[in-house]
Image 1 (cartoon, rainbow, N blue to C red):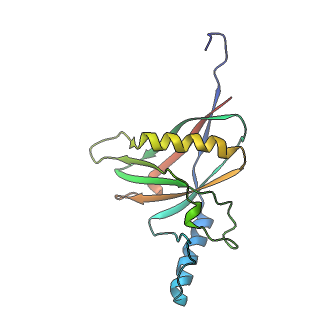
Image 2: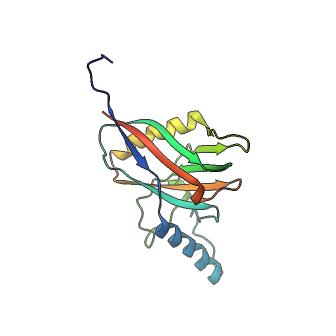
Image 3: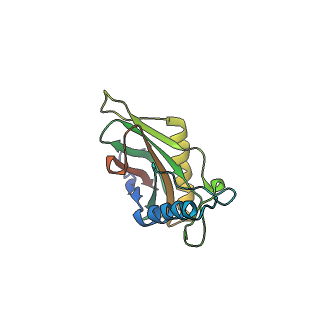
Length: 163
């Protein structure tokens, strides 16, 4: 890049816990248990250690993935899985075929302040987000918490360059 060219603007888009949608999915699990029914064939039921997050794309076009910005305030692990679901949970259940590969996995070890991650998969997933943003205003994610962390311990966002 030439010295006189402006640097691209960076946009930090946070992953926000969708408490209403998480609650709705937990109610679905409770309802099935209460009635003694099984999930629909291929349906993804929310597990206790999973929560639904979302990104509201403040811009949809001309985005280039830069990096994930994920911080755990204590040791543990999170797995971020994208969904192809455009959600209306009262009408549509999440199906396993709507979970996107690869997932991005981030962890912090007991004796470290630094975050580690599965770099290749996280980068591939991030690059796909740039493409998905072109056709969506909102993207949903399932985040699985393990090794002692929960939603209160996570701060996560995706950083894009504006082209």
